[in-house]
Image 1 (cartoon, protein in one colour):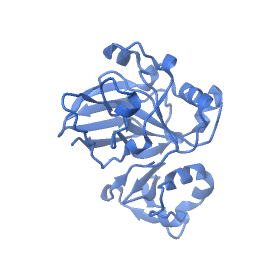
Image 2: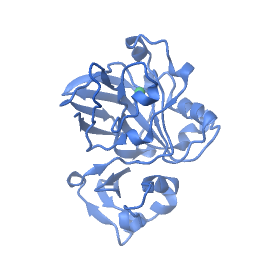
Image 3: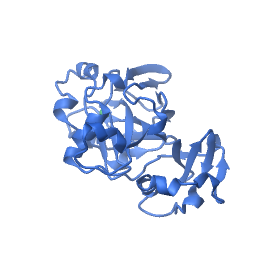
Length: 273
Ligand code: MN
């Protein structure tokens, strides 16, 4: 199924090709702050979703007629792996590799939705790059997760664009501007992804294909990302892990349109301003 947020924090699901508004059936308060309603749903998903499609307060909606919001707005953390494809390391002339460098953090507040623009900061002379990545959503809390159990902790997947200002400041700062992490357009639950180690991910700028790679070429694969992260920090439902980008990164400028598509997961287009 596909789980999404829309029209200012309402929660919906696409199930058997029908899209349903679950907000009232789940008792979701869209005005509550902090906006953790999706995280709470993921944490208690099976119980709260049991029989939901037959709930009297469920309404069918037209997914093309709503404004989609970022599916997770307020995770406990947003982790990302640097240089996790060999060819990206080569293009950056970087000796960093994810299997040696581990993960970094990106500010949760950089997350933005599939209908929001990327807003470039005013940094004359600086390059701001797109990075096409798969976002992994954690479904079950865990610490010291083993490789054989790792995928059991995955709730689902989404498209993720890791925007970054190139330069020498701390990486967390260069990647943490507001709107620097478009994420969505929905979360595709793990059961709908046949093999997360064989997903083609593509990114276009103004309809020109810039990045085109498969998750089979990740240096640190998805189970190992979960093992490595959970050795350090407890992973919580709703946490997001960005896989790292393949080769083909490059600058964007105001007026560009970025499209990201990951097979079996989703697709979204974002304007840059
Ligand atoms: Mn990245």
